[in-house]
Image (cartoon, rainbow, N blue to C red; front, top):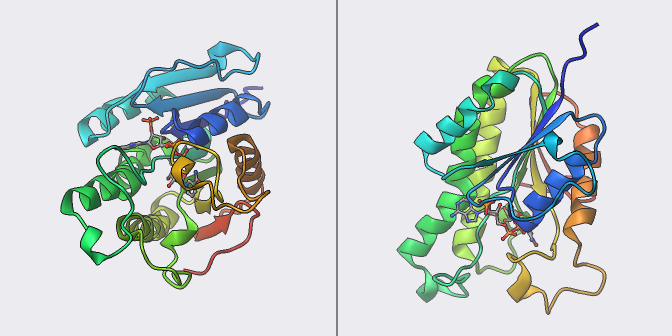
Length: 248
Ligand SMILES: NC(=O)c1ccc[n+]([C@@H]2O[C@H](COP(=O)([O-])OP(=O)(O)OC[C@H]3O[C@@H](n4cnc5c(N)ncnc54)[C@H](OP(=O)(O)O)[C@@H]3O)[C@@H](O)[C@H]2O)c1
């Protein structure tokens, strides 16, 4: 009897949450191979003592040509992906900072944040279609954020980040509708990890209540459990780390 391989794919694998998802999938005996895609080289041992041959690290730029080329390396495993995690995200850098008021809105910052938070995930959904379509149930979780919820916005501020996550959610919803028609084996989750100790949240951790700053490992474990229980219903689920639905 031929046992079909199960593969996992992590996009944006060098980040705090991306790295934790790679480690989570490497430790999952139900997964035979983990593909990690990053703009950076792999410098850390994520294997936790497991066979390094289980991990395939692919370096890629995030333009459509380079991404399509990266996907060509996945084609021999088309139809075998059961888990995909899209982990890209940008909130601040040496050139940009979340806006506190209207006067802080800046065209370049808006474009940079939309590019990493919404455009790059959208391009992955396009170029990965032929790799994900098949018979194997495939759960695609994308790192969104609660601040992308329009109804949950009571504080204001963070224009670009909030809007990019709302845009991401709409892209995921639209893709869920199309995949439900063309690739019924794929289920989408827009995931809010909660405030997690990574470089992205570092400057904002001082005000986080005790016990509410999660480790990436805890969040990865939570997301793996949520992905395990996801149903192929053709819908986009918008869920937090506790598996609770978030209002749009
Ligand atoms: N940490 C939190 O508290 C928190 C809370 C809510 C939501 N999130 C979301 O969780 C996701 C992961 O964030 P993190 O906390 O792990 O942050 P992180 O450690 O700073 O990781 C950043 C991630 O974004 C990718 N990235 C950075 N600049 C990019 C660009 N210009 N274009 C495309 N990709 C780029 C990196 O990919 P490479 O592998 O190529 O470096 C990496 O995967 C983000 O979507 C974030 O918005 C995080």
